[in-house]
Image (cartoon, rainbow, N blue to C red; front, side, top):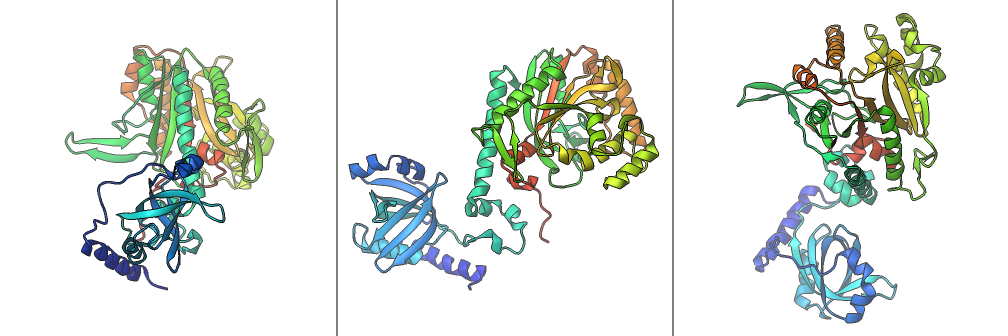
Length: 490
């Protein structure tokens, strides 16, 4: 079997053959009367007209049989078959040039008439064929032949060409984002853009990436969330705002976590967590229909029914249901550590009780939240940007949404009391001093904005990548990020 270098050398020779004949292997212009999908859709009409049409695409297969050649090409909308017969109607010279210089992977323009073969395959009888882009490396036949599976992520462009199911996942991803925009726009939300580079990171419990602005001689952070800037817009008088943004968190990698990811955050003035819970349920039911007309999707070989009323559970009750902790929010520190060890949760003995419970939750509880479920009544230290419940100030008025064992949504009745917010930030600073690097930071500029007055509001964050994972039955977040960050080969 020829090596990549040998194949490239052969193709370079073919490239030079085209050039020697005065042919530009990378011309500016191309002609396309019908896409491959359009030619299939309008085949009867076009074939009956017997008019010559132009089509374009990448050559995906070639089958030569003496003086005839069958080949398939794909323009991104689908594939179509081309048929060349030497001298009828393509010239012998053009036919022989195709034999000598064209390969699988090349982009071509063909001119001809449409007809049905004896096997009733829709086909274009080629009169002329022209090179649009000569490929110098061969396309992989099947990715299962790769010894390094990470090559699929390093060379996503080849993954997309070789695996239609991968391409389909990203088409679904695009449809989901478009549907979310349409959903929010229809409800009167304004799409906003907030800074990626921030002088103070905030809005989430996470470690940031650091960078430096040379001209300003200023240390900056890549945002971990756009929450605090969107809330500034509420202060500025916008009643409904949202952003679909890239966020960055300098943390570990696993099946549902990646350092660069896509989030939707939206905020509505004069709303609260309860109202937003109903809104999220409506949105999720709508989004499930993108992949299933019935609203019942399949994830990891199990069905998830989005038609039924979503279940609502208290956070502490969910922890109690799947662990030995009967009253988790009032359990002594030592007993929390024992339970963490029993369930295999990775925690630090110096961690706060809330963080240990969260570790236990992620290991023992979250995988069991399969059907669409809202969890409510979280401890106050868990969500420091959230209003306290008026009937129990140890809890906050918030919810998280789970399906398929994945956390998809986090939402609050947003804290708008600047004095309470300062006290919460100060508490987080103490946690930071004890070694929890992902604690939230005190943001004086945000606190100043709040002191001018922020309306009561309901805020929601939705992980787009995880949502697409669920809707496309994908088990690893890398599979639904076009170009995930991968450690270099060398």
